[in-house]
Length: 281
Length: 204
Image (cartoon, rainbow over all chains, first blue to last red; front, side, top):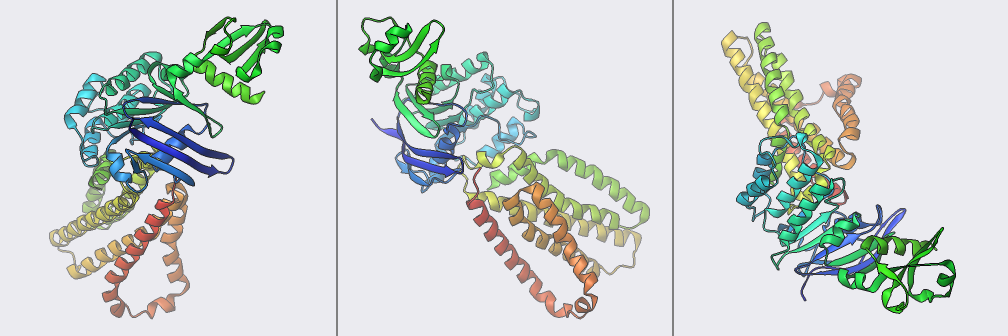
């Protein structure tokens, strides 16, 4: 399968934080959810992919081409949404249309105004009066209106209510209907990722913990609830992480290795939390 | 590049309206005093105020991070600010010149038009020199911090002239004038080069 995004050994050092040797690839036609707690390195990774920050080492290819060498060519085909609006808030939708028309060579004015209508955004009001959800929808409308093949989204749903979040996720699902399209989406809201992602990449303290198809991940892991005594006896090689409470132990385990036990379905959130906890124990 | 300049023009739309009101007010005062000086001071102030305000809006909305995610080169982002600032400076100079000429003819003032032209072009040149010095500092330190430096940059020549009046009186101005345009262009080129270098290494 062709990859739209290939990151190899990506490293960026700051004092106090290092994005350490990140490697993953995003197959064309799929959605990858990039999860991790605040400060884990999600935004740093995205900024390095977009060439907003310089990498110290490693390799990033978008559409099979180096992201630094073909910077502007590549960006014609990428739609970007950050966690907040970056337009000066005195602008209105019509201004944004005139500006973007001169920046993106394949800007589609009709599509843009169509999205504004669909998202119920006013054309002549300054962004200043927009709610957070409206501003986010405006950024998404821009990202979708120049025939982008890849959407790179950094926390596009953070700070939004569940209704708007759901609407936005639907937009991404609609975008991915075209098999030439792909989405790379970071979020710490794991339920959002679970809803739409085909692949999950999990970053923790600057290191990539795992990249895996979502279904494989959910098939593989489960949550085992048992007493302390039972827990002492089980094979710890298959335990990803655990937490003790008053009633016993909850552990994230490889389901297949525990046939006789009651193992509940794990969510992406379970997998993320237990992996971090496992790290601490 | 056009997209970026247009963005700044739209971003400043409130400032344009306020500017028109202020210009109208000072125009009125100038008519009252039969002296276009009041009006001219405002055009000079605005030729600095507008580009700086555009930069401040960018900082406030973290525009640069987004601009760099768009198909725009860092060089284009820097140059667009120069084009905007110089463009505003030239438009303001033209307005000042026209208003002053109108005053001379309408009120039959005893000012020689060629002197007026020299004065206005002089002010325009000084404006561009200040701009050339300031732009790299804006890109390096941001508008807030660089604003302090700007006061120094503007006051320094005045202080120097006050401290060394004999030296400046002995400068053969007539000989220098022909090379000024060249010197200003050279200064602008150096300034652009520095700003681009600074911006290339900036991370958002």
